Image (cartoon, rainbow, N blue to C red; front, side, top):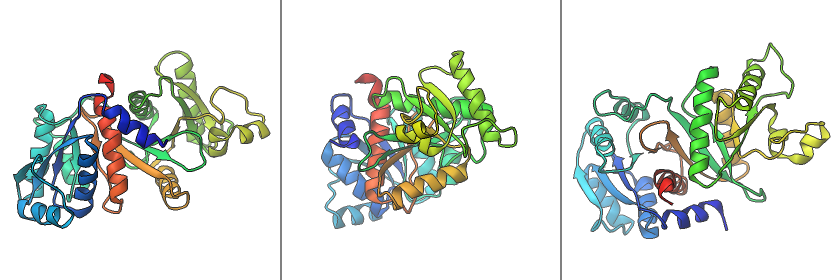
Length: 302
């Protein structure tokens, strides 16, 4: 059974979350919403051009009978209304529809109505790869360009929280770099070593952290053994932490386009999970992101 199917089963054992969707008049978004509704894993509040929403819903046979729809033509106002729905507790998850990322994030970070917590916002993606024995979490492939040491601490904690919510009690975290030895000319290796030591001393809790590790040694026990790397993370990573957005972006897209991996992703670090998928993402990826967000939102109740 795939990891996303396992998550669906877990969601159904808890309280089903409500998702506020900003500028919901988008075909792929509504196709994902239809699938989520049929699975009974979430309810929805759609905010956007009501005529367009109804037209698309009719085309894809999506019933709106049990879905709240609020008419709003302006994507900026739609984003604010969706954020407010989450902020006031009417919804438990925020989702991006047909609206630029910068607009919805501006609403998320608004000091009056936003979803700030004081922690950095970061992107966490879960991949299910055929032939691999477990799901893999990758962070941060979309939000933080070149995080410093303190930002990496928060990025790790955000990913660990997601891992806990999906049932990984003590995730193994690999700090990725090009080499396994600390090299003062390669900041990624220095940061990785410091984060590993911080974990040993209990400064980062809820996970086992090791690094620097190259990708092969993080996910393959055989590769790690060939290089003589013996520690409790090598080859067994649950979470891959990339050193910068370029590495994250290439790794993410390589898994999707070369490995044909199934993926779902959320923005975390806010008061609630945020489904912030790309316009290029398929409705399946959007659905998987809804699944991940729903389990994250209700995981503590399961």
